Length: 192
Ligand code: AMP
Image 1 (cartoon, rainbow, N blue to C red):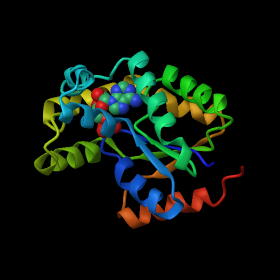
Image 2 (cartoon, rainbow, N blue to C red):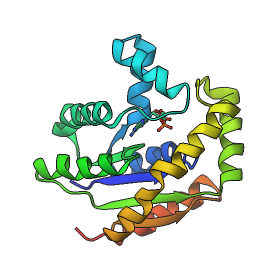
Image 3 (cartoon, rainbow, N blue to C red):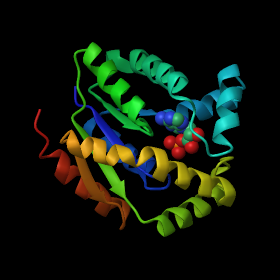
């Protein structure tokens, strides 16, 4: 198996680039945001809890998020050539838990692809996406909170994975094709 994290701020293009990675490498996509939005759409208890955090731009608590991720890994593993984790980890405890969850299954994380995009561009992209996405968190107030949470809580993971030797910075401006070709170049150089 070949396991990747696609990392970056909200609006950095993680979902879009994940789709390309799935097509090219046959990886299984785990987007924690998508999992939570499905729960919200189905009106489950978990969905109600998730919505109370998501609509304010806050993170779901680590313990709950880790349980959800572990269940997704186990649900999807049998058919997987490897995972692309999108939107997880978002905190240092989540990163530590991801390592443990993979190790417990005889697996490891191969690389963290960090899409690097300036804040002004992120805000512009998210406001634009809000015009069509119907997402409760793509509005100016929540976007501001989400970027704040990214900088305070999630971006320290960049340093964490640099120290771990797994982080690869990907210049996140340009066309979808240009960015994907930067990602593919890097994947070609990953050693097992
Ligand atoms: P995303 O679609 O990845 O932008 O996620 C949308 C929202 O879901 C985030 O703003 C958080 O409220 C929640 N969420 C998704 N993934 C996580 C995670 N790993 N930890 C905590 N909250 C998360």
